[in-house]
Length: 136
Image 1 (cartoon, one colour):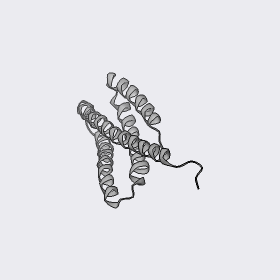
Image 2 (cartoon, helix red, strand yellow; image 1 turned 30 degrees about the horizontal axis):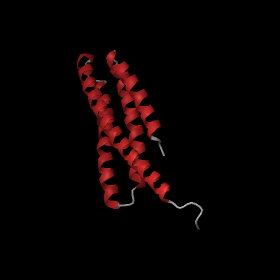
Image 3 (cartoon, one colour; image 1 turned 45 degrees about the horizontal axis):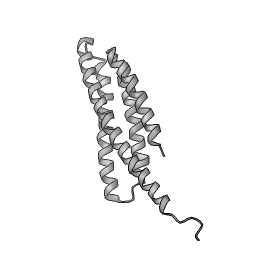
Image 4 (cartoon, one colour; image 1 turned 45 degrees about the vertical axis):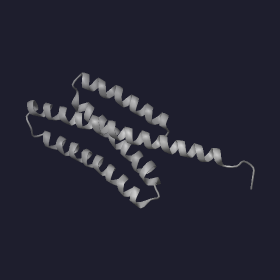
């Protein structure tokens, strides 16, 4: 399971690099970094949160939430493909909008994953504390 500390470090590194790219208006570097981070968060959410749920209704809700982020990834990738055929003057503005979409999506999904991991860690810690030692 991904630790809260590892997730926090991943996001710290992402935020630092992403901010540097935005300061230089280097959207061609910011977008792939954001997409990669979004895909990593999506994988963690799917495997370590939704994949661990036992209630089918909760799984359906979780999958619905994650489907939204998959759609965002597809939208950004599709937009990038079409921007190859657009004048660079217009493409820059479109890329700036894609960066905004990615940044907000990463932030939202990170908060979802972090909150869920904190709850899981709390429940696991409580469960371990309640287990009797040496009694069979």
